Length: 210
Image 1 (cartoon, helix red, strand yellow):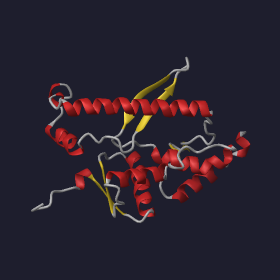
Image 2: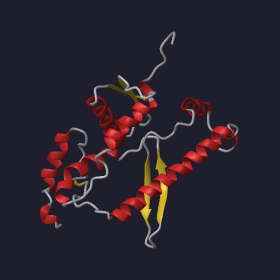
Image 3: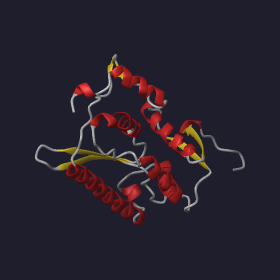
């Protein structure tokens, strides 16, 4: 594959805008994205997947320990009352969708610097860019093509195996990087017939008598 097989950046940006989710193809007047993707071997892809799964298992073990020792919330984590309220309301169910940041070191080891299960931005870039650019990369496998369906199945499972009729999205930050991910979730929910409503946490107010 050579750069000659890739679309012109202006054509790519136009196609990206037409999707209606990402509108920042340029950054300070320069192209934001590299059109030539990094193609991983099956061995590399499987190693990354297994590393992410193992890190997730470690997080789950930690969650179980903290749930069994609630005093740690004060003694070690020093959570505020509101943070503890959210913790007990979630009942330890931390993993709906998360992003593990993995690095391939020069000595061949894989290292994880962060697992973001709050608002794991980057979903839209990964899903949409792969969809638009995969045809220019020959016989490759897009690992994100099944993500929307997997996310919906997770929502159904969390709703007692009953498809929810309405999906409410409360996003915790004011970062514009998160908005594209929220649109992806909303669009995916509507695509399977559910209503979708989103709000920032600062717009949520108590209802009298509730």
